[in-house]
Image (tube, rainbow, N blue to C red):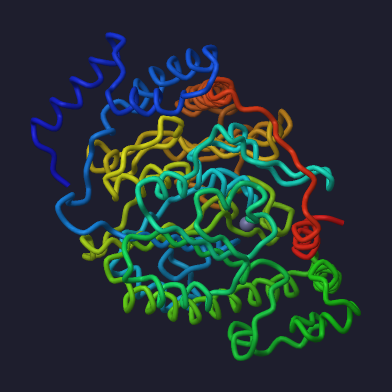
Length: 500
Ligand SMILES: [Zn+2]
């Protein structure tokens, strides 16, 4: 994308306005609009936050990717829960797990190095919807089954922004941690737990009625991995070990129809210390991915058929680990869990692009609004990706956290600092993408070089991001909001294996 001198000059002028204490008009209008009925202290805080934000964001506010004279684009956001980028062909996986997605991505923009803000479903999805880090938006995985963390009403979600702009909005999701009770349903005309078929039907009925935002989320590749034939045998047809994977048998063995019971039953069969058994579990995971890849074709075709002028975004909230760093499923901050697919198919950019810059899903909401020519929200911590990458490349660090205050990871220029309850790990992702050699334990002590300087810089950067998060949360006046979960949500969370 090219930028004229006038664009650049406009950007410099806007930064100048901020430096001299004048808010860009758009931010000022929105701040004033949102302040109606709020007390003066919050107004003052928001004003300061606006100045801070404008200085932070600088020149991205007026960027336009879309042609404002044309019909508006629709947006379909597809979140395949627990889909690790490294298990997809288009991200270099050796197995043929995703032939359809690979083909689809040939006419899309593929972000090769996209990262989630957290390894857990509610934290990560809420970052996508609010462009706030988990410690700011405060929607967490449940620790106490009587308290469910709900999004503060001060925060505007992506769907609320789109709704206000005249979009028809609908969400079909897998329930549990993306239930409407957490705040995910805000801004949606309809928000239901539902299968892919319902999203396809919705497209058939509404695809040509005017601009829309459709969110589809599925747990199909989430554990326990239960691919149906022929996908269950696709990647190790010779397996003769003890692991039973089909849902019906698992339910019979568990004497239950609750997911938690057959999930527990599934994992109780797995000898995690036996590499062959772990390899089979990986093959089952790859099998559900291949099955999902085949099924997704119907939804992608429905979009093409009923709403061709649609920006389609396919991503995941986190990946999955299989003992590479001692644990299974998803709770640590290594790359197998944080590196997620991010594929954007834009009707006006179908030449097939690969973007190698490291980006974060914190940037999702501003990037969607950028593509729709809708101004970003003042609250956003992320930034519009195309503007940033097209202009100057991306040197911004990527930050992830979970659980809040205990685990943090920060990546900058291929170096990654991880903090787990005060214990540091330090990796060179370019030379050691599997995070096997902790540089803290070897190179730095032996031969202090740029690694020591880089480690120090990463520590300072991590401290800065933590301070910024506390500042933004305070500036927005966010308070911890909890509710007792409804019986339905409680059952779903149990079913998904999150609560005992
Ligand atoms: Zn998830």
